[in-house]
Image (cartoon, rainbow, N blue to C red; front, side, top):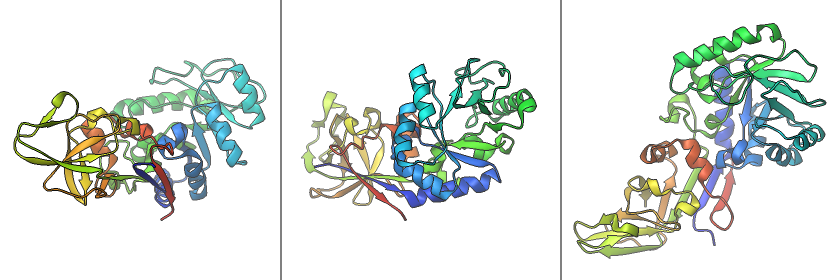
Length: 339
């Protein structure tokens, strides 16, 4: 039986999409649902985003897009990543749109040319000659969440370079730019992390009117006493300074609760408790004030305990943590609600 439960609130996702649409003030919102919607479930989240007003979906690979096409027959779907010749044929058959970062444009499929204005990854230095396959031009902001000055330089480079093709769909903004840089709006914004109610700035998402979509809960499997000097877990990273109760939680790094989350807090029976010792593959320990029975509820992510807090504890970003949560049926029960 699964030992934890992941709840996805599609009502919250819809409200986040509408919040972003208000911020975009007339520009389209294209929902980024790559990597299984950042671990939230691509098909469910994509359908909810479209229902709330998103105009298109964005994924990383042709395979991701084909999976969505089976369920969302009429959706507009853009593939970010490079496509092989065989994948181009699949994209053509599935009515997908491709992002292209070179001068050779595939025939018979809608293309968005990516201009490198400062990210230094995918993208051409100059736009190729106009072609009928090209329906959009785009760029990727490197610092919209950390350095607005550099982001604005990228935006102005893009604006100047694409002025001759302003009749095409131009899209620049990510979640951070949609919320903070109105000059990045152009015709559409590609929003990912924010539609899941997570802050692109690593701060309180509620400050931007966003609601977390994902909650993650489990329960205490065992409570046991440690005498002063006794330890729990590999490498004895936690040694009790005094007689202490600990709770063993049946979730570990195989489930996406990473080793570097030791020291973060979870809620046990509604009370915050520190994660102690080494997080192992299938379990971690929490420090308790008293003995608690097996089955006592534990909230890993939920109301009052945002994923941003765990990201700060781990020295990483919410994107990485949410993508790493293992929602396979053998590890977790996945519940979809619509509040």
